[in-house]
View 1 (cartoon, rainbow, N blue to C red):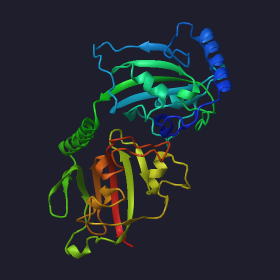
View 2: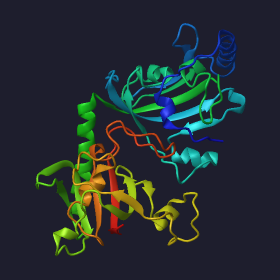
View 3: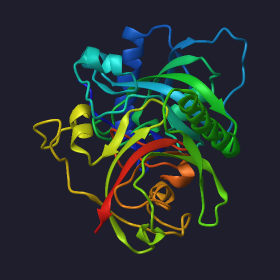
View 4: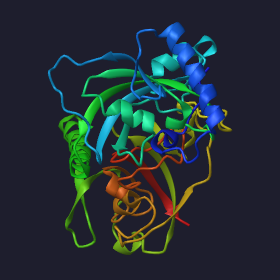
Length: 351
């Protein structure tokens, strides 16, 4: 059994600790678990509240550790105690979800990319990562007050110890390095696409003065003739759009109001055929003040110089999307910090 857990719960410290009696009860469970199942485990915390169960080190010789206020990409698997009837509450591995019989087509199984800071991460997760280098895998047992605390989370009851396995894939030094990494992803995607046999190519987007905008590229898939520039969208006008948005890195469908896309993804919506409608048109209030809008800025950039009836694809860094911090509003499809995206947008008409 696996419960879909909001990624945000891993990236927030517990606000409320269990009582002293609850802590003692947990520590008894932890010590008995170690004694029976993991006799070779070693305590990380002197009070026996965090234990190192197993450790597999990389063989590359790279010993660099995560730096406070940097970023890390890692795989994660978490299960509940007691071991005898354990439940996996989260996994970033889709194959494991299949094995558990809990796979959901609406869930994005992918490594997490996170800000690395003591005030941002759960104590147990931060403690594990601070011991690691790229390529390392650690399995840790933690008391609840270093994990989900006395409030718990979706799939994790209150005051419940957890066992989790972390594989550290990548260390990114700081925000500047994370932004550069993201920009490389976008440029690599554009270069590969443009080197292929596709008839239409991605071009760098421009602002209202014609100046290039870094980190965003547009492919004019099917652009209606623009005989009259007055037909282009104007600030304040509401546009009816169809769209489908994807994670750039692996092409997983993030969000869409196109029935066929939603149907293919297997989302639990009222669709009965691949051509059925998922929802009404997306009503977007357009603005030519490209970097001042509060919506996803990539929509305005992509539609700046096109008229109704046009279709475009746009790839972009987080500057034009959900911001460098990302968003975990959708638990099954979170957008991590510095995550580039790709959107297909159809400008149907003006509302």
